[in-house]
Length: 345
Image (tube, rainbow, N blue to C red):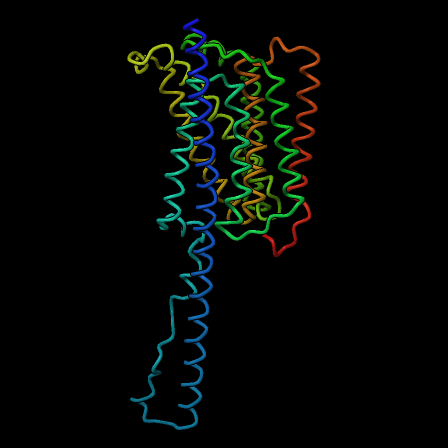
């Protein structure tokens, strides 16, 4: 009886932590988008100022031509800018790294991800994963209020469909949340199924990275596809670390697998943030956040199914649920991302 009560409290703590974490993640992404918008506005004001200086310079030169002065007095009052063109060559992508607002968003995102990490230690993955929809729902309120973005009825319908699809996908998975020992994780990584999955994802990352520099501005799925692939490994390593910590806290530093998982976690988390920010620079937050959530969720489910065998004992009925959930999820994404005018972005 006491054990059942403890499990209920553990699940409740995990649920509350995951909800708070996902709200923070949604707010963090919108704060980062706000930072990008401020930088774009400052750049536009700077360009307007330079245009004004150019106009003053041209007027001064015309006056000098109409009223010739001695040679020593012919220096223009407004010097020509020799470095303006060079300053424009500075990649705009680097500007946000100097923005305190952007770093505030990063701090909030770290707190949110920490909440999700802790949630995996208290509640089963089948409970924590669907709570990612909280980020979607909270974004519906945060993006219009913070950024003044237009929220269409079609967006609301798409969010509802995407939520239904993701919940269906997760409910079709196995409800068990087994604790994994370091040796068990090593054995799972060494299986041919995961090695094949690892090879396929590496090829996909290479192809999408090449496409990102050429077509990233045209399709939201390229940069967010990369973020999802990296995010899948972030979640897999997070689950592994949480499982090791749940078994033993003090001996965790004695296992080599711990350092491998931490390295994967840090590297993939950084790359995920990089490509999400690229998408935020090009597309509307109401498009980026739902799409990123859906692609990330699918990536985690597929990766976890391969590495941790989440669907090993799945029935045919659950298989149909999984397929139906995927269809609903992509339909919801289509409703949200399609039909936007250029001005909406």
